[in-house]
Image (cartoon, rainbow, N blue to C red; front, side, top):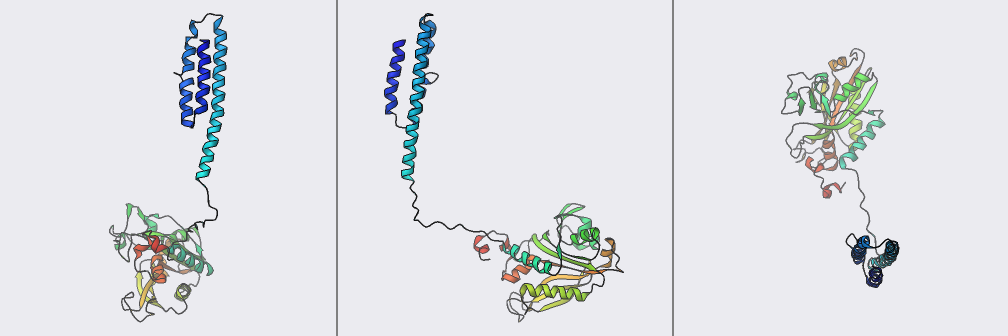
Length: 339
């Protein structure tokens, strides 16, 4: 058995010097030191040795194992160094080559214009209010003077979660929520996503953005509403833009008006975009209905106010000359990178 151990050591040392890869080194370890390896097989036969031979052969076996393990570690270090050198030689970096300029992201056109709108109203003393997208029927309809039998409550126009919960069709509920928590003077805008059961086409989407505004104080008049909206529209589109107010009806304002701006494409002369009218509808507005004030605990005999709602996509389309609302949501970089 002594001769076997010495022979294993000599043969292993010779083979180890000729190994050229980590894979062959692992195969070498298994062949000599593995569970079924040559050294292990010799050690299994120690049970047949005499009491005098066993410690001598055991010490020699441990010496051979220690020798092999040490020799393999040295060989592994040599092979790793060779592998690293080869990798460095094959992966030379030419520091004189031009680098790739990282592509910087930018704000979505809707976000760009929304930030401008916020800045305009913040400059006029407004604050920003935010609320839930999933809204109670009371805040979305009833508190805004929209009764149970009103057409706006039809399932064909509104996404219902259940009989008492809807996806908000406007950000107007924030008017009520604000008036419940805050007493006049109030001056807020409420931007956010809204949802309506509309078929998708060039001018309609079931998901879009709206910006509601509310002012409540003593002595607020229709003239204040007119001046505020004219200032907003002209700061957004330019001082040469004409603004028109047309009588309209909204359940939560009285009197109410639709607000138009002169067509950005033809300057009011009439074209395909404005359908020959020279005007483009921008938003709806009006004086807050006394019933809405009363429901929120505000005395309409003491306070008055005005409200307005503008679709963000609509003003961005007018501002940037975009004719199809679907472009905002297609995530086409060819479109988005233009802004």
